[in-house]
Length: 53
Image 1 (cartoon, helix red, strand yellow):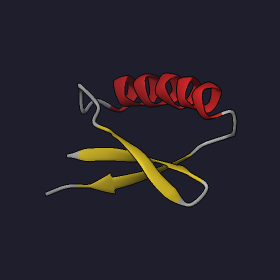
Image 2: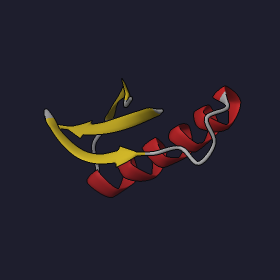
Image 3: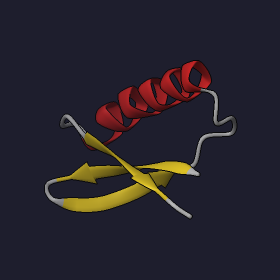
Image 4: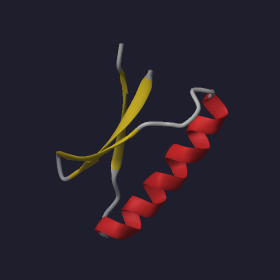
């Protein structure tokens, strides 16, 4: 399973677990969530991909 960690100022603030593992669905969900969190924290956020076995 692929998950995405949202990093703000070097600290993991949230882990996004996509509903669907389809690439296009994941991209849409993560992009929307990153925009929302950027507005919430007032600074650009960094999104890193991670695989959970």
